[in-house]
Length: 147
Image (tube, rainbow, N blue to C red):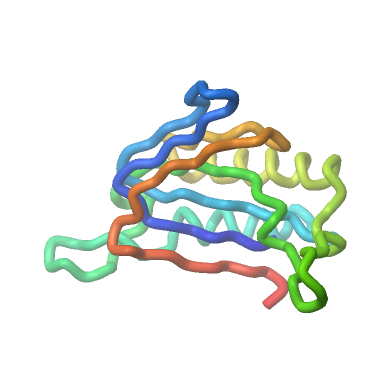
């Protein structure tokens, strides 16, 4: 699995012009499921997203996690994170999991994160989405279980 995690002051996602998920302070998670990924990777990354100390404490140091701050998470499926752009001009997506496997692991990841974070919102798997966010910092991390 590959994740781009961004600390945000707010974020929302629209499908066909309608907002389907929105949060204030928290994290935006763009999630790509790779061929061969299992629930083990989803468990690891859900715990990492909830526990990563990326929020400021009273001294302005990144020392608090999402669970400690009570922030929210917005999780968006994004298979394009797995594009291989090394050859030619057209990205190859052969490293991405097939849609059925991707959806199952995406939903599993969301359920695991909901067990750790009280407010978890989502986009719509496989839909064309518009995502808007205000990156706080900016603070952005790439988490990759294969790296």
